[in-house]
Length: 373
Ligand code: SF4
Image (cartoon, rainbow, N blue to C red; front, top):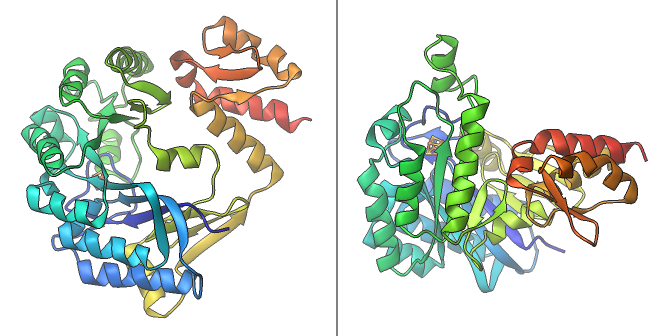
């Protein structure tokens, strides 16, 4: 059985954002031909002689995939389609930065089958966007959404970052309200974390910034929950909000533990038992393919313990929750008493927004309990 979900990592960015520690390749000029040829070659090396199989979702993530432009994305989709047949109604997502979204690009993306855009908005405050080293200003976000809609791509997700350092003057309430005013079908939230090998990490080591205090992280998360659910978006996963029928089908496949294929530098891949990942640096991925080798970095067979931990973590992060045993009901009663979770009459445990703020600790607790059986 081939995976029904395909992820393609496109590593190019115009510059590195202050907080970003993703695997990216900063390029002024994107080597579109080189990348697309290498992607096609990876497919031919990893799936030789395989008859085209049907997939339900295709997701171009990054990096900034929209930097491949209208034609580049068209060619990348064609390369994938040489091996994968997209099912009727397949969800085909492109992560895009606002400055890359214009009428011409949207028309070509739509022709290529892109039907969902995930736009890196992050904030609607020009000073904050500058501080983040973003390459767009606030007005570009509205223009991008408008161009996407005019071009026929209605399914639009916006990314927003919350919990910025105290030293950054930012109104989270205003940003949430600006995002909702654009009537997105989906919003993804990211709580800022300071990673060591980023500009932000260096600013912290010099004592210039620090992570937001826990109370503000909590306050902004709960504000987003209240405001977005009141606006008709379901808070269906710890970091994701979507209108009915517009929840991310691709990301949801990860959360239910479905197999997926990952292509491109640093992409991960899961066949239901083994996880593998590609070489992280663009040049290393390219070099392996240039030598006709699978660009794999490593793989690991999930142990029983890994599976228990993943099931607990993935189950608790979505509104689906997970079914727990009688012994676990006893153990999780204090969570329910504290307002962190609810239990239905079929023993399905679901975390509340307050519980999601403690997701790691609660999943670790449940994993520990299950590992003792
Ligand atoms: S655009 Fe996205 S991937 Fe690129 S540097 Fe910024 S946050 Fe990282």
